[in-house]
Image 1 (cartoon, chains in turn purple, yellow):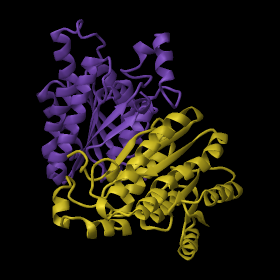
Image 2: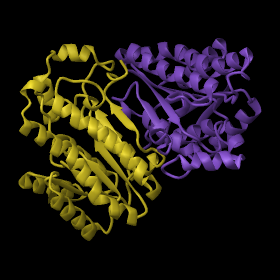
Image 3: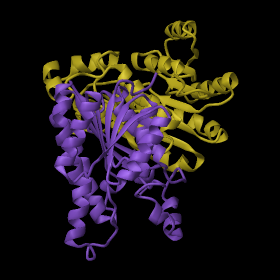
Image 4: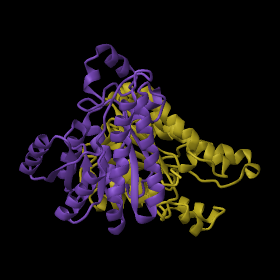
Amino acid sequence: MGRLDNKIALISGGTGGQGTAELKLFCQEGAKVVFGDLDDEKGKVLESEVRKDGGEATYVHLDVTSESDWQKAVSKTIELYDGLDILVNNAGVLVVKSLEDTTEEDWDFVYAVNTKGPFLGIKSAISIMKKSGGGSIINTSSMAGLYGSPLLLYGSSKAAVANLSKSVAVQYGAYGIRCNSLHPGVLEGTLMGDDYLDDTEWYKKRLSQVPLNRMGVPTDLAMAALYLASDESSYVSGLELMVDGGMFVKR
Amino acid sequence: MDRLEGKVALISGGTGGQGSTEVKLFCQEGAKVVFGDLDDEKGKSLEKEVRNSGGEATYVHLDVTSESDWQNTVSETIELYGKLNILINNAGVLLTKRLEETTEEDWDFVQSVNSKGVFLGAKSVISSMKDSGGGSIVNISSIAGLVGRPWSAYVASKGAVRLLTKSIAVQYGPNGIRCNSVHPGIVSDNSMGELTLSQFPFSEDQLLDDTPLKRFAVSEDIAMGVLYLSSDESSYVTGTELVIDGGIYAK
């Protein structure tokens, strides 16, 4: 018996380190999964890998900044699996620059992916979730979306996601739609990891700030997403779920 | 169903509506459970019930305001099952008096059960958890530990639990010990929930109207969150607040 038996999930950014961990875990737990991303070749390879392991997953091309891509991804999900219960807004980009070095193009790009992406995803999924009597939306924010992080562009785009989640939770709760945000700390093997992990000084400093004395891994966040996706959390909505080894409370 | 396979758990307030749901769920998920409470007759009969359905649970007498009771309970746990991985500080009392009506005795009683009880529990298990390389402590706070409610003593006690939790997370993270708080809204199928509903200055309809998910919680909603925080699935989660309130706090 899987924890997501009979559920249909749509995951954006599905070919990255984090998205792949979620995709595989959701399939293992019995969900049928549509996952979208930009690199079609990588997506197709991952699709056949998951299918070989007995999972039911389908790749679609999905640029999260494009409303028509979202609409197609949702239509394809309905066409294939006849429903949509779970949306994981996982796609994101990280740009690390000081305020003075951040260009208007940087700003627009990061906000388009990290903030407008989840907005368009939710907007595209909401009517089908309303019709089917509910659903669970999981938005990937960040620890950096909750405090004054030096990552001002990334952090502020993720803060918008945290607030968007609460607003959706309040507006659509009456339809049985739940919406929560995930707040990872530093996760190795993801967007927020690998460039920085090579920087030994940075790594040591960050690690000293983590009470649990390790960096996270994609599975840590995927397990949290699983809890929020499943009916086990059917009374949880508008929550900020931190997965950060305690970094946020120690800051 | 083996999310707690190989784990030994200690649950305070184990004979109440919330505690007994946790005892049963934990046993179903493969944990060995010691549960404590004040009503020995009720405790023994729950122990029997759980054992009859194949669970491994043992009742002990535990007044959470007594350090020696806690020490006896922990010793008994180690004696029976050889170790201690999970502590659920679930025991609590509700007092809905306003500030002017709250006597010094009321205050001391509520703080001793809700706050000192959690402190003594955590203090009593720390060294066993250190010995076994880590553990998970879950403290039951309340939505009333996050927002103002007109029940001064209760709110203050639950607010204290919220921050005590974070302090434990920061202090004992390096020992592999995690500590998180759970913040239920109104749980309608336990005695505390019934009391809350009868004492609340609003009607049930008004309360539901204010709740995005349009229902009250049931004990299982809370137990599922406690299960997530107790299992290794949340091994990178510490110091966080798991709010299980149907979206009220997000409003």
